[in-house]
Length: 111
Length: 109
Image (cartoon, rainbow over all chains, first blue to last red; front, side):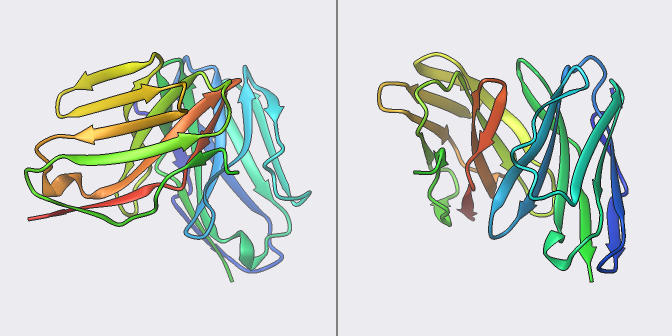
């Protein structure tokens, strides 16, 4: 298996623009998680899905953030409009009972 | 109280010595416990998980869990320079995995 796949790996955008991050989980994993990592706040859970259904989105910072999982092999995290404070590394992870496996992350810079 | 607490470090350990990383958690309902290693600029990588009280060994790594004290630790024997990284403790509660902020480990050659 190729592992968790994320795209793009790097994104630089201007404040106010829409940003869409993409994730393909490991086949057969029932759970998918979106995290944000910054030096100040560490690794923060934003939202997670079980069998494509959002279970807990309490970590989503505000209404500018939204996430979807239309099928078992694809998920998106959208920020609209983006702000400089959204700059971070965004990780997608999928899990089996033995643990979570992370994608390589998307480094987002909002100017 | 934060759900998962770790000393941020850096923890400096001479090459060949034992590195001891510690973590405490607040929710007694936590069911399983994980250690991740993260190299600078890379994603977290799962290295150990433990469910039951006691020790679990895997090569140079030993995870220790004490549910009564809400404490989990990771021992790295014969530390190598390649072990220099940030180590993240994580706990699973109701299918939600919560991470600590990590401890930076520096192995001194």
